[in-house]
Image (tube, rainbow, N blue to C red; front, side):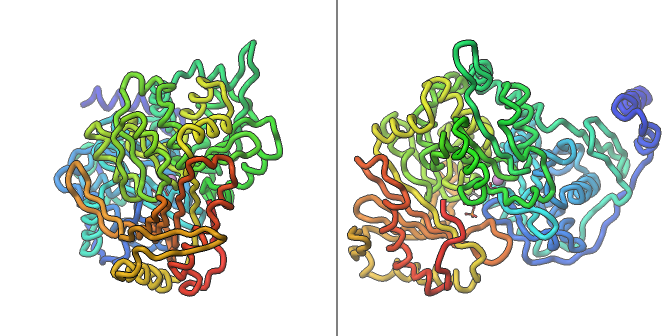
Length: 589
Ligand code: VG1
Ligand code: CO
């Protein structure tokens, strides 16, 4: 024990030359936890991915404490002696919430927390760390693509042992516990700094409690190096004697990917210094709405459109699991197409050469372009509800290698989350291998497979009651015997309803059932309209209308023009304008 204390002290001297004395005392100090009485809040139901609310809600007395205690209680006996990963996108209230987590975890006999320096860890990095350190799970402090800052959103996600988002059974259990919580345990005097890497040991209620602060990128960059050919990528990005550099513009939107982009692209792969913007994580994202789509990442789109030197542009969301890809002159790649193109070219990526390619999957509303690739390559294809948690079991069972969502999420079984940086590296690997531009790759793809035109209309912050009424109206169409076979005509195009239902899913691995996952209107020509209410908003209701249409021969027409008749029909069927009073969507992607 003496030797142990001595070594810890030395470690502190090394990491904290000025603070070591103060800290050395705190190591020896034995801390005691207390039990604090509390009452439930009733609104702590995790949505599609974690609990998201306005910062002010999380700042209420006991609010965050209740939720963290409930997460730990849901793990039952496994909490004792476990290790958890903690980190997030650095948004406002991250520091405060990590302090709460440290104090509550220590009081609940958690053995160790591994925390990203300054509380920073991307969602994919958390997933990877849980796996490499064989942890019980991880707590991710983020509201992902929702805006941050004191007046905006905060969020807490819980990820399980396999690195993936907690499945429905666990989030249901957490919610149930938040509804009956009476007390939480906390170590009020535990002060722990997480600004610099290092190991700190404490004694809480006679038990050892360890906090290890790590560099947020170290583990993740190793993983990327094991997946991709960095030499090849570096030749592409920094250029060689015979080929000029391939110029990228990466927009981290002041979210957490900034630290990863800097290290991986600017330092390791030798991209130009001007190939990355907004790479300093800010607690309000510098007032940027960190959602990588054509509306909120407009600055990137405009820059790439205006400056023909850029060959590829990409943007990420706050917590780094989403990506948007555009080519030269801002040629937009829909996430559904991006998934299909990557699926079709996995042989360009070393990871898949060694691990093999098992099945593919997409969330139900995602355009069906990848289905055609699966069919041609003779791979299993899965259609799951919205949310990355539904991919985990299939990956664990070795039946799924690559999957994606229309909401700018792409990823593989290297971790159990979608992964923005991975997606860009995958695209660059394909480009380096094929020596073609983004646009050429897409056009070649459409020539082979035909084209799925896809768009999504979002109506943000509608009144919940109006949104529910609209969904009820759509429900009623399912029961109406006259719905199937009905014709709708707009702009001279006629569509006939073949099927209408509310999507439900049975997990092929554990047979768990997810019901009410969105109203699907399927037309005779294979086109689809899907209606869902978002599960990630923090106030009001966001209505999402997804429009997917397949054209075998048409390959280059403008997507919004092609989809216009279906959009009109979608509005007609749902009576969206009448119910919500909304003339136009907030965001079109
Ligand atoms: C949205 C997306 C969904 C995604 C989820 C979490 O959910 O549609 O595809 O998995 O966000 O992404 P919803 O319920 O609002 O449609 V992230 O990057 O915000 O964790
Ligand atoms: Co995200």
